[in-house]
Length: 63
Image (cartoon, rainbow, N blue to C red; front, side, top):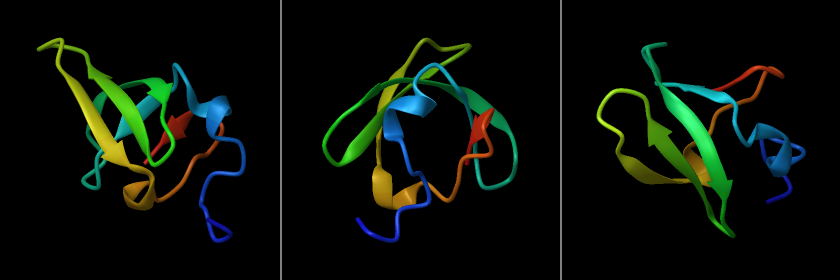
């Protein structure tokens, strides 16, 4: 992934994740080869989001 929006994927672990409509949805729990593992705040769900869907990381939040 040479055009990756995130330089260091490990740096986003435990960071907040926002949806495309800027709503807080949870935190990054783990990094996999092609996905990030997201845990939600309210429902305590766990989701795998493809790295290709990540648009950016500002040092505090992933979007």
